Image (cartoon, rainbow, N blue to C red):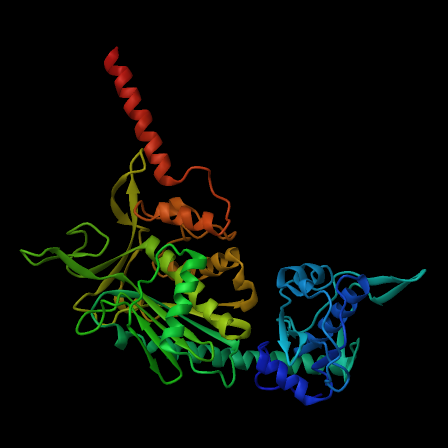
Length: 489
């Protein structure tokens, strides 16, 4: 059994050219002249090959003959759209199966390139019988409960030897996961020196299982354009105001807010690496001027004199908001440059300089009956923790990168990380990020709840017909009418 190339997982045109240039099939590469997904036979045969490749991963290249030669344009290209393809194959393949399609027009012909990622469980157990009708006969390709493997260039039922291959691959994945965690911590530990100032920041690192090998350099302009395009597509709860504050460093691009630097702290910072790894940070608590004449300070986003002289107050809703935003952007970057497999997402709280502070407190906003702000309080009895017990403590979640295209899956991943971060402060669960993959606008403070509502609507998540702002306006109007009626009496 041969190993896939180092760039396995990429479905860009360079990967296509490399696979054509090999000129022969392998256990991880299957050439197909055509793959007719409009027929049951085409879908079942592709499901068989994909299931067999899920032990070690592999490619299916449609539009090529036995020696990689061009065989004519691929038919029914529209059926290789990711949503359509996944819908057809999901009948046969287990959950968490990842197949990444790409359509290319190369040297005068159309091709379809499919990357079949190794299954996280080690192999694929078919969910149902793979059958189709050939004339008057029913052809059975595989049965529900069977496992297939690649033996040379054929997809066949697995054997005892294949179990050893599965064990070796899972061990290699475990070793790679440790390497991912090491890489994530390296990215995160480099962030505080870049931020400046004192206070608390939330930092998130994303390290893909299969980064892009030999990736082209990202220019600062391209990085900023990517962030702009992402903001337009996702309409985040809080976006990033870009300027010319982007520059190349070894291996990637640093993008930061325009107000930072020259002695001022960065409110947010992104490091987007060429190969797909990324790290980002956003301020949670920093002191700003409350009165320019007296020089008094207050914590950003909170009333003056809220905390004592030893405690940094952090808003619970902003932990969840910025965690979701950074996770969304950084996983989008990994997918954009062509990474594959899983991503290890690591989050932690950072303090670039403690400024004499000794504790951190996580706060919830109180509201009155009209849902108007009525002050702040600790989010839990143990929500005030010593600084050393709360910062630089990583929480980790691993997810399939392909699934991060789904907004609800991103919310689930962010919920998992937020729950672990908040547990440090004795807080039971996130309030805005729901475990079932939805957003609760009323879990955010009143200055953010309407933005959360609009973000949820933009992503197509189920929300109430009326947003928080409209509900408050309607309540106040009803209250006004009731007072007028009372005066008339």
